[in-house]
Length: 284
Image (cartoon, rainbow, N blue to C red; front, side, top):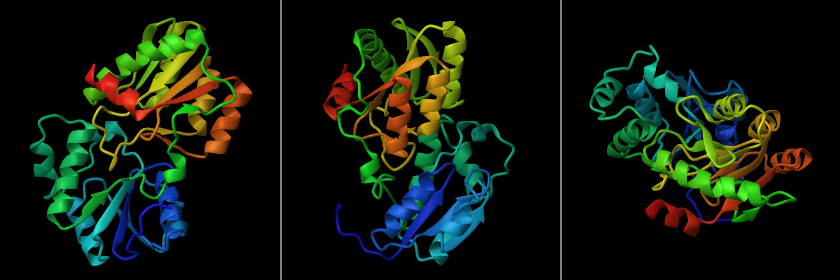
């Protein structure tokens, strides 16, 4: 089940959703009990019961988070769970460690902000590791995940959509596009995948949609890894979306059996594309 890991000195920096809970369970299955730094504005209350050692910090309290990680003896940390992009414009006050870091950013996007935090952690002797390290079964291999593969119409929309999505992902604007009849009807920005799909449905006027979600051309697997879950499929069903394309090896599928069952029940095709195809498109 992967490489042998030391069971000591692990921490989890937890954002929203089920991702942190799944990481905790995956680590526990390998004999690792993580200390958790939970972001107050994002993380789920269920972490209180799931974690043996947990501390709540505000999104702007970088100095406090580092102090707690050192206090817990953390040398390697996983960052799991989304911090919503719109938090960049929130009124959460940054502390004396976070404020200058934000001010120095050339651009205020996810990669820039979290990448800067990762460098601060590394300077403090805390290595940020691949966020999928404990979740290998949730990362799909290439191929169709559902009973049916995309049909000719959907395949044409996927080919077009992946070319568009790769460009916006490379600019760190978003990772999802919604396609109808080889026209791009919605591009993800700060609102997130589900709202992008719903907006695409409003604009498409009832036409069948294809959803394409990609990783970034040089995806840093330590943070902001693309995620698909049951809610995504439910939103697709309500939006007349009939196919979903994702990147194999670079996407997490939460509750995969339910995701596949929901998709099959709705007649939605899910296809994962190989890393070679992803790299080829990135260089195109």
